[in-house]
Amino acid sequence: MKILIGDIGNTITKLCIVDEKSKIINVYNIETNKIIKEKKLMKLLKPVLREDIKKKILFSSVVPKAYKKINQFLKIKKYQVYEIKKLSLKDLIKINIDKYNQLGSDRIANAIGAYSLYKKNCLIIDFGTATTFDIVRNPGVYEGGVITPGIKLSILNLNRFTASLPIFNLKVNLKTYGKNTKDALNAGFLWGYQGLINNIIKKIKTSFNCSFKIILTGGYSKIFSKFINNKSTIEPNITIKGIMHIYKNLIK
Image 1 (cartoon, one colour):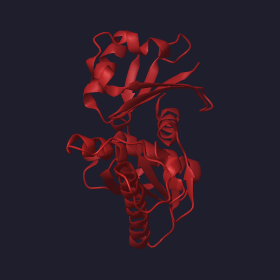
Image 2 (tube, helix red, strand yellow; image 1 turned 180 degrees about the vertical axis):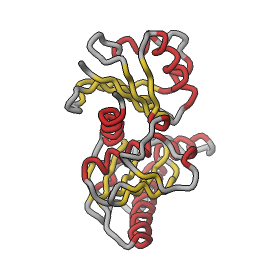
Image 3 (cartoon, one colour; image 1 turned 90 degrees about the vertical axis):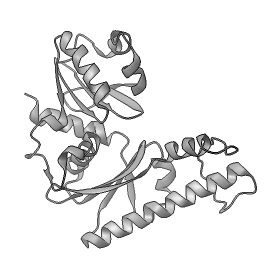
Protein backbone atom coordinates (compact mmCIF):
# COMPACT_ATOMS: atom_id res chain seq x y z
CA MET A 1 0.00 0.00 0.00
CA LYS A 2 1.09 3.56 -0.72
CA ILE A 3 0.93 6.50 1.71
CA LEU A 4 -0.53 9.94 1.00
CA ILE A 5 1.00 12.89 2.82
CA GLY A 6 0.71 16.60 2.21
CA ASP A 7 2.16 20.02 2.96
CA ILE A 8 -0.41 22.83 2.86
CA GLY A 9 1.58 26.02 2.30
CA ASN A 10 0.50 29.62 1.91
CA THR A 11 0.99 29.50 -1.85
CA ILE A 12 1.18 25.85 -2.88
CA THR A 13 -0.19 22.63 -1.41
CA LYS A 14 2.08 19.71 -2.22
CA LEU A 15 0.49 16.25 -2.11
CA CYS A 16 2.82 13.25 -2.33
CA ILE A 17 2.23 9.56 -2.79
CA VAL A 18 5.07 7.74 -1.06
CA ASP A 19 5.92 4.05 -0.72
CA GLU A 20 6.67 2.40 2.61
CA LYS A 21 10.41 2.84 2.04
CA SER A 22 9.81 6.63 1.90
CA LYS A 23 10.42 6.85 -1.85
CA ILE A 24 8.30 9.57 -3.47
CA ILE A 25 6.19 8.04 -6.26
CA ASN A 26 4.09 11.00 -7.38
CA VAL A 27 3.93 14.71 -6.53
CA TYR A 28 0.88 16.93 -7.13
CA ASN A 29 1.10 20.69 -6.65
CA ILE A 30 -2.16 22.60 -6.21
CA GLU A 31 -2.54 26.31 -5.56
CA THR A 32 -3.78 26.61 -1.97
CA ASN A 33 -6.25 29.35 -2.93
CA LYS A 34 -7.90 26.91 -5.35
CA ILE A 35 -8.50 24.50 -2.48
CA ILE A 36 -10.11 27.26 -0.43
CA LYS A 37 -12.30 28.49 -3.29
CA GLU A 38 -13.19 25.18 -4.98
CA LYS A 39 -16.71 24.01 -4.08
CA LYS A 40 -16.16 20.40 -5.17
CA LEU A 41 -12.80 19.19 -3.87
CA MET A 42 -13.09 15.87 -5.68
CA LYS A 43 -12.20 17.77 -8.84
CA LEU A 44 -8.81 18.68 -7.34
CA LEU A 45 -8.11 15.60 -5.23
CA LYS A 46 -9.32 12.79 -7.49
CA PRO A 47 -5.81 12.07 -8.93
CA VAL A 48 -4.35 11.39 -5.47
CA LEU A 49 -7.20 9.35 -3.96
CA ARG A 50 -6.06 6.11 -5.48
CA GLU A 51 -7.31 2.71 -4.37
CA ASP A 52 -3.84 1.65 -3.29
CA ILE A 53 -3.31 4.38 -0.66
CA LYS A 54 -3.73 3.82 3.06
CA LYS A 55 -6.74 5.30 4.82
CA LYS A 56 -4.58 7.34 7.20
CA ILE A 57 -3.27 10.64 5.80
CA LEU A 58 -0.87 13.10 7.43
CA PHE A 59 -0.55 16.83 6.67
CA SER A 60 1.52 19.76 7.75
CA SER A 61 -0.47 22.94 7.33
CA VAL A 62 0.02 26.66 7.84
CA VAL A 63 -3.38 27.52 6.28
CA PRO A 64 -6.15 26.47 8.72
CA LYS A 65 -8.97 27.24 6.27
CA ALA A 66 -7.50 24.97 3.57
CA TYR A 67 -6.71 22.18 6.04
CA LYS A 68 -10.23 22.30 7.55
CA LYS A 69 -11.79 21.99 4.11
CA ILE A 70 -9.56 19.07 3.06
CA ASN A 71 -10.07 17.38 6.43
CA GLN A 72 -13.86 17.58 6.20
CA PHE A 73 -13.86 16.26 2.63
CA LEU A 74 -11.51 13.32 3.36
CA LYS A 75 -13.46 12.32 6.47
CA ILE A 76 -16.59 12.02 4.33
CA LYS A 77 -14.54 9.74 2.06
CA LYS A 78 -13.71 7.57 5.12
CA TYR A 79 -10.08 8.64 5.53
CA GLN A 80 -8.48 9.39 8.92
CA VAL A 81 -6.73 12.73 8.69
CA TYR A 82 -3.95 13.96 10.99
CA GLU A 83 -2.07 17.26 11.29
CA ILE A 84 1.44 17.01 12.70
CA LYS A 85 0.97 19.57 15.49
CA LYS A 86 -1.89 17.47 16.84
CA LEU A 87 0.52 14.57 17.40
CA SER A 88 2.90 14.05 20.32
CA LEU A 89 6.28 14.70 18.73
CA LYS A 90 8.41 14.48 21.89
CA ASP A 91 10.03 11.18 20.88
CA LEU A 92 11.15 12.69 17.55
CA ILE A 93 12.23 16.19 18.55
CA LYS A 94 12.27 18.48 21.58
CA ILE A 95 10.70 21.89 20.90
CA ASN A 96 12.58 24.54 22.90
CA ILE A 97 10.61 27.72 22.15
CA ASP A 98 8.27 30.08 24.00
CA LYS A 99 4.99 29.67 22.08
CA TYR A 100 4.48 26.33 20.38
CA ASN A 101 1.10 27.39 18.94
CA GLN A 102 2.88 30.05 16.84
CA LEU A 103 5.32 27.61 15.24
CA GLY A 104 4.43 26.57 11.69
CA SER A 105 3.96 22.87 11.02
CA ASP A 106 6.18 23.12 7.93
CA ARG A 107 9.06 24.35 10.07
CA ILE A 108 8.61 21.43 12.47
CA ALA A 109 8.60 19.04 9.51
CA ASN A 110 11.76 20.68 8.13
CA ALA A 111 13.51 20.30 11.47
CA ILE A 112 12.50 16.65 11.89
CA GLY A 113 13.36 15.86 8.28
CA ALA A 114 16.81 17.42 8.58
CA TYR A 115 17.68 15.83 11.92
CA SER A 116 16.42 12.39 10.88
CA LEU A 117 18.72 12.55 7.83
CA TYR A 118 21.89 13.99 9.35
CA LYS A 119 21.79 13.46 13.14
CA LYS A 120 23.78 16.65 13.75
CA ASN A 121 23.34 20.38 14.26
CA CYS A 122 21.29 21.61 11.29
CA LEU A 123 20.27 25.01 9.97
CA ILE A 124 17.45 24.76 7.42
CA ILE A 125 16.90 27.71 5.10
CA ASP A 126 13.54 27.50 3.35
CA PHE A 127 12.91 29.85 0.42
CA GLY A 128 9.13 29.82 0.57
CA THR A 129 6.45 32.51 0.85
CA ALA A 130 8.65 33.67 3.71
CA THR A 131 12.37 32.89 3.88
CA THR A 132 12.84 30.99 7.13
CA PHE A 133 15.88 29.80 9.08
CA ASP A 134 15.30 26.91 11.50
CA ILE A 135 17.82 25.71 14.05
CA VAL A 136 18.11 22.10 15.23
CA ARG A 137 20.83 21.06 17.64
CA ASN A 138 22.12 17.64 18.56
CA PRO A 139 20.51 15.56 20.09
CA GLY A 140 17.33 16.65 18.26
CA VAL A 141 16.36 19.96 19.89
CA TYR A 142 14.51 22.59 17.87
CA GLU A 143 15.83 25.94 19.12
CA GLY A 144 13.75 28.41 17.09
CA GLY A 145 14.75 30.43 14.09
CA VAL A 146 14.47 33.53 11.96
CA ILE A 147 11.70 34.66 9.61
CA THR A 148 12.36 37.15 6.81
CA PRO A 149 10.24 38.32 3.86
CA GLY A 150 10.03 35.83 1.00
CA ILE A 151 11.79 36.79 -2.21
CA LYS A 152 8.94 36.22 -4.64
CA LEU A 153 6.41 37.89 -2.37
CA SER A 154 8.72 40.89 -1.99
CA ILE A 155 9.08 41.19 -5.76
CA LEU A 156 5.29 41.05 -6.21
CA ASN A 157 4.64 43.59 -3.45
CA LEU A 158 7.24 45.98 -4.81
CA ASN A 159 5.44 45.88 -8.15
CA ARG A 160 2.04 46.24 -6.47
CA PHE A 161 2.88 49.27 -4.38
CA THR A 162 4.98 51.22 -6.88
CA ALA A 163 3.93 52.88 -10.11
CA SER A 164 6.85 51.85 -12.32
CA LEU A 165 8.76 48.87 -10.88
CA PRO A 166 8.15 45.67 -12.88
CA ILE A 167 7.86 42.03 -11.87
CA PHE A 168 11.01 40.15 -12.88
CA ASN A 169 12.53 36.69 -12.60
CA LEU A 170 15.53 36.63 -10.27
CA LYS A 171 18.63 35.26 -12.00
CA VAL A 172 22.33 34.85 -11.37
CA ASN A 173 23.82 38.06 -12.70
CA LEU A 174 27.19 38.96 -11.26
CA LYS A 175 26.78 42.67 -12.00
CA THR A 176 26.77 44.57 -8.74
CA TYR A 177 24.44 47.23 -10.10
CA GLY A 178 22.11 47.76 -13.07
CA LYS A 179 21.93 50.24 -15.91
CA ASN A 180 18.21 49.53 -16.36
CA THR A 181 15.38 48.95 -13.91
CA LYS A 182 15.24 45.15 -14.12
CA ASP A 183 19.00 44.75 -13.71
CA ALA A 184 18.93 47.21 -10.79
CA LEU A 185 16.16 45.21 -9.12
CA ASN A 186 17.96 41.94 -9.80
CA ALA A 187 21.15 43.29 -8.23
CA GLY A 188 19.22 44.56 -5.22
CA PHE A 189 17.48 41.27 -4.55
CA LEU A 190 20.44 39.02 -5.39
CA TRP A 191 23.06 40.86 -3.33
CA GLY A 192 20.61 42.03 -0.68
CA TYR A 193 19.44 38.51 0.11
CA GLN A 194 22.96 37.13 -0.23
CA GLY A 195 24.08 39.54 2.46
CA LEU A 196 21.02 38.84 4.60
CA ILE A 197 21.48 35.06 4.41
CA ASN A 198 25.21 35.08 5.15
CA ASN A 199 24.78 37.56 8.01
CA ILE A 200 22.03 35.50 9.65
CA ILE A 201 24.08 32.29 9.31
CA LYS A 202 27.08 34.03 10.88
CA LYS A 203 25.02 35.38 13.80
CA ILE A 204 23.39 32.00 14.49
CA LYS A 205 26.78 30.23 14.48
CA THR A 206 28.16 32.88 16.84
CA SER A 207 25.13 32.67 19.16
CA PHE A 208 25.47 28.91 19.58
CA ASN A 209 29.26 28.77 19.22
CA CYS A 210 29.08 25.72 16.98
CA SER A 211 28.95 24.71 13.32
CA PHE A 212 25.79 23.62 11.48
CA LYS A 213 24.93 21.44 8.53
CA ILE A 214 23.27 24.02 6.24
CA ILE A 215 20.30 22.70 4.27
CA LEU A 216 18.56 24.72 1.56
CA THR A 217 15.05 24.06 0.31
CA GLY A 218 12.43 25.93 -1.69
CA GLY A 219 12.37 27.73 -5.01
CA TYR A 220 15.53 29.85 -4.79
CA SER A 221 17.82 27.18 -3.30
CA LYS A 222 19.88 26.67 -6.44
CA ILE A 223 20.48 30.37 -6.98
CA PHE A 224 21.61 31.14 -3.44
CA SER A 225 23.63 27.95 -2.96
CA LYS A 226 26.20 29.68 -5.19
CA PHE A 227 26.46 32.69 -2.88
CA ILE A 228 26.47 31.21 0.62
CA ASN A 229 29.85 31.47 2.34
CA ASN A 230 29.37 28.10 4.06
CA LYS A 231 29.07 24.70 2.42
CA SER A 232 25.40 23.83 1.93
CA THR A 233 23.22 20.95 0.72
CA ILE A 234 20.05 21.33 -1.33
CA GLU A 235 17.18 19.13 -0.12
CA PRO A 236 14.11 20.04 -2.23
CA ASN A 237 11.85 17.56 -0.40
CA ILE A 238 13.03 18.09 3.19
CA THR A 239 9.50 19.01 4.37
CA ILE A 240 7.98 15.90 2.80
CA LYS A 241 10.78 13.75 4.24
CA GLY A 242 10.01 15.17 7.66
CA ILE A 243 6.29 14.49 7.32
CA MET A 244 7.04 10.95 6.14
CA HIS A 245 9.37 10.36 9.11
CA ILE A 246 6.60 11.49 11.46
CA TYR A 247 4.09 9.23 9.68
CA LYS A 248 6.29 6.15 9.93
CA ASN A 249 6.98 6.69 13.62
CA LEU A 250 3.65 7.97 14.95
CA ILE A 251 0.79 6.88 12.67
CA LYS A 252 -0.15 3.32 13.55
